[in-house]
Length: 456
Image 1: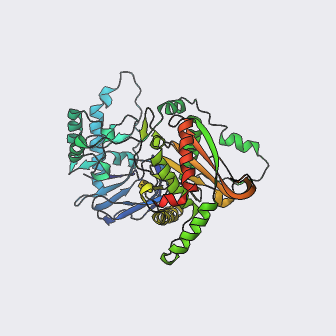
Image 2: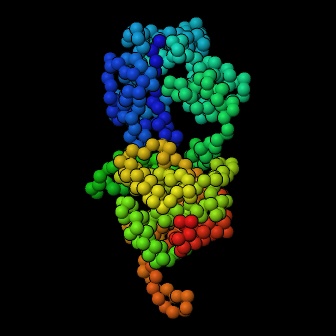
Image 3: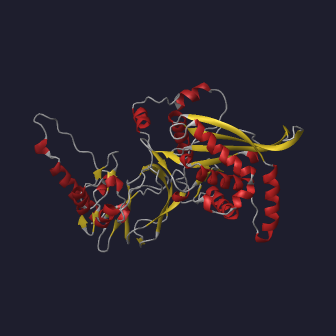
């Protein structure tokens, strides 16, 4: 029977996407690994590969379609020997089966009920029931706790029920993410991993409309009637940034710790290192030192290396440091994993690569998801100090300003000048208390004041 090609989840946070471009057309033969389409997620435009071989029998979602939900059928794949007629046959078969299971049909209607002609089914509805596994009709996918469908073979469902496994926690390795027997067997012994943190009270508040959303688009537009303006359509990234930061400020109890660090010793040390590294084509930035200082600070104060996970705190062992990178229309926070174990030159090279690919929207999801802590540096724009918004589920974020020459009182009591850099640590009070946050910020500053120690 024909097989549905479903809208894939190309990132852990993706719930819907834009089908930007089809690279195949109806009637084309495809093999596993062939690129079928380009799909815009909330962060990037990514290529979507075929899992099975066959012929594109029907394209259900046109190129340019926005807001296509994950697991929505977007095309139908025909196997060898099948034709477009099999799509209609499969749809009729499944429709009749569904009527029988739900007591549908004329005999099921209550007496006296008026009979209305049935609305014609759309092609996407017809294709909805065409899913198969190994040539046999598949059982209809069960909904998960959040209402989304779970695709699993009947055997996998039975095994999961016998073992008491929650299918929402099992990742499918079959076609289109379908859960199969091997996935259930692997899940029985797999170590428990942390679920993406969600704030259930916040979700409930949003569902009940308790969180303010502000005036509607029409109401705002009316305020500016008669004034010239340009309406800028929100892309997926800007929508995601807006939603996540609004949620962060509404649900995370921020508090702020501010300190300044003298940079003169670091700048002198950096100049010496860069001169020695010049033959290798390496040039360290101040930001590279900040990343390393923060990574070592997380190791020195391990209780601060933590994230909020709805009803618990997760304390991480490695220092995975996220760094904000501005791109057109939003920002990425690529993560440098195990930053405490990497040299300054390795951090520099990795950061340059991540930043370049972020600006070109070429990062893979695993490269910008995770970490317990983030750095946002606006010093290169001349900003002296600011307060950054925590990126959930992180426990904190460091806002870094520009180094500014200022008058200071020296150790001998004499008035002198020094280059001071302002830093503000935004902290989630659910994860890190005031004294702990102060200890963490002090550890960062200690590393920056003594840069040679970071090479040990």
